[in-house]
Amino acid sequence: MHDLTLTRRNVMLGAAAVAGASTVGLKAGPALAKEPMAMEQVPYFYRFKHGSMRGTVISDGILPLGDPSGAFLGVSKEEVGQMLTRNFLDPTNVILEQNILVLDTGSNVVLFDTGMGESPMFGPTTGKMMQNLEVAGIDPASIDTVLCTHGHCDHVWGIMTDDGKRNFPNAQIYISQADFDFWTDEDKLSVTDPGFIKPFVEGARKNLLPNRDRIVFLKDGEEFLPGIQAMATPGHTVGHTMFLLTSDGQTMAAIGDTTHHQVLLMERPLMEFAYDTNPQQSAQTRYRVLDMIASERMPLIAYHFPWPGIGHIAKRGEGFEYYPAPMVMQELPG
Image 1 (tube, rainbow, N blue to C red):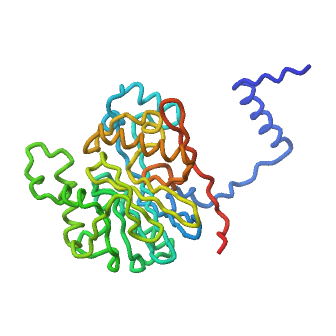
Image 2 (tube, rainbow, N blue to C red; image 1 turned 60 degrees about the vertical axis):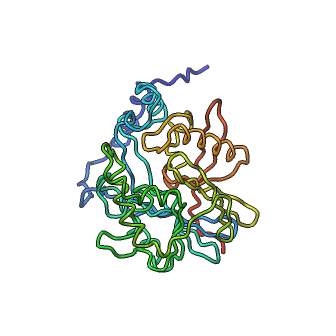
Image 3 (cartoon, rainbow, N blue to C red; image 1 turned 90 degrees about the horizontal axis):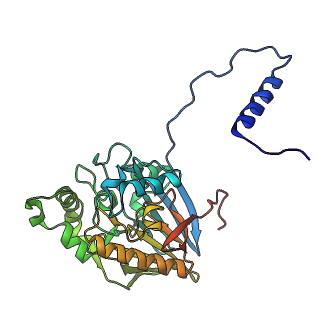
């Protein structure tokens, strides 16, 4: 019987032998490459169908949080690093995607959140929404509805340009009143230890107040547009809202920031997150929502999960596991 045991050394020696054999009797020719390989990434968007609805996921670019111990709390730095390493992720820098959904329901063209806008707060990799909308062939003027899961920078700062123009001039804007009131509260600009609160409030006021006449406040449980129902999920912010999208008897959850990370806050859903307004409430909300989605085998789209953020989750021990949906790259049926 042949010994089929493989070692790293055997594999490397075998590869070298194959490479060597392929050149026997051949005269080396000139290199054919004319220019260095291009390394810049192309703009990215992804189309999918949900029942009779048509969705396009637009990226606003990656959002780097840096050292995970600064954002994910209540678990040791070593354990967080081990969780990331075990899943082949960088243990020194947590990277979040920004998956903005554009949904054509048949009666409305709906944009879910708006990214960082033109702000450099998290570096040069954000603020790609408008560019990617153009590449995807979506006219911002055709968007009649903007849904804001909450009032944080990476969700409402793309409503306006830096020079005060509306990116979506024909859109009605929906947000919870609790979040609107909290993030536009002028008194928060003078708190003694503002942390990230002060710049977040400044940005929310810049983007929301000029649009007050076109803002509608969401109500928990309300189907405020055909096939789109609001679901209050407080904790990350006081009025954080996710959405249930139903078409042809199929329901998908657009969970916003109910959870931020496909590993850390799935395996340990009760871990606290530094950007939560109420970390304990957020953890309880997160567990409740994930348990519901897993129990009902409901597809979801997560704002910060790896591109394009569409998949399923299942219960695993005391936590959950995320299963990305295969990307369908062929032309979608009509």
